[in-house]
Length: 85
Image 1 (cartoon, rainbow, N blue to C red):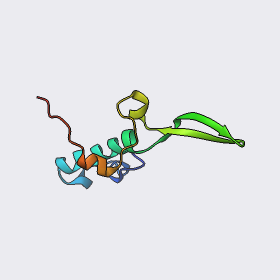
Image 2 (cartoon, rainbow, N blue to C red):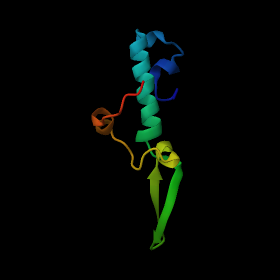
Image 3 (cartoon, one colour):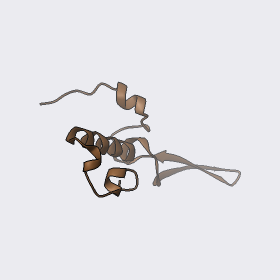
Image 4 (cartoon, helix red, strand yellow):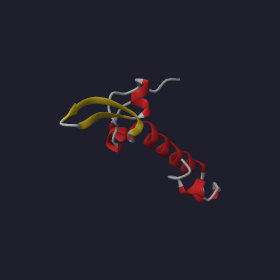
């Protein structure tokens, strides 16, 4: 996360100015890592055609069975989630 979030690279939380901004920055990075970005180590082999390997690319959330596809930022903003108390 430190590689992708400048506020952590500088080792300071003052970059975010407010706690709400900091929480939003960290939340977006967690979403990007777990739902949006496919990870090389989690890919599954599909088939070999003419010596070319084909893979099913997965995110950590897909590997855990939380979702069945890589999410886009549009999915994040438009998906309705139930609110539990």
